Image (cartoon, rainbow, N blue to C red; front, top):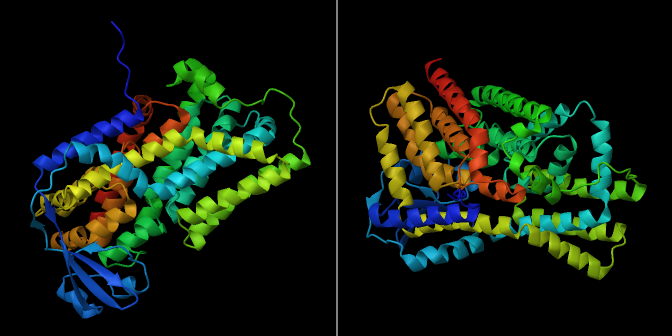
Length: 497
């Protein structure tokens, strides 16, 4: 009997999109009224379906709507997206999505996700140029010799640095750029590609799960909950440190097992395929010349500039993509690459990440179906009713699980914050806990589910490494169970002590 092959990332996402399309026929359609602030006219707009009413942009307006968010959070731009108004949910005429809406959703998703898709393609183009310069091979050869006998430092360094980026400024989508660069380094250190994937993806995930100063989750969620972002910061920092240590130890144990016996690798059957995909010349004596050093420096500075721009200058995807485009041109001049060779190498590199870009678009298309089918707010409404009348310990842990489930349908951390916090945060008042507990539940629920969520970044990351989703689940699920128990303990302690 022929063995059934686990479906590809694209197929998994299309199956999920089909399921969500079916849900729009079953789940009642509903909407909350939304509130949007206009900085030019200094007014609020209350949006109800197709209708919009302009009201004064004052604290009195917020009070009358039951929104406990300081006015300055709107005026200074901390909250820039429309937020849901509490107690305004109502069922509306059903808008079930049909076959044509289903087949159009990936296209709409690609259009909506064009910003991150172009970032991915330009990163691919830059890497294509780097490959023909020989700088990668020379740099990896040097690093493999420098770390000989101390390869474990690579795991600690990469996981810790990426997690710091995640907890401070929300390093997530940007990590897609790191895989083609770091996987050859880990392979040269005699680890498998899963170790590289885990160090980058788990580092980012645990960082964003336990966000401390991340403006896209901790700060915007606190703002939308009507509290200062420093509320609950101590417990989140403790959770971040312990959670990161758990992830590093988990990865190192697996890495040691694979290094001692390569056949223990979860992806051992793909060993040759992946090594050919990320082939490097670490065994040969490649001289790291001054020109190659300069090329590597320019390449590295692209990431330094990108990280600084995101963290300090409020850059979005357009600015990040521009950095990699400029970097590619500079490297082309330094390496003296001919125009035709430059163009061919750039487009070849971009083409190798085209599949990843399509996956991002299909995943975004699922959200399009949810929104067009008017069932996102219905999910939120019923989720908020589940916790009614609970004691505070049970409340925190049930809300943690609810946020994990909601993140399947709303994978954007900032989108989740502005849509749910005005609805969920007042629930804390009814059970006698601080609203920072709701922020913690949101972060831990969304963050932990991101380790495995097919509508998040994991499928795009796996596509770069050519690793199946089933193999990732086999590797990561024990860690997910461990972090689930850890999160329950942290949340329970936070509400009682």
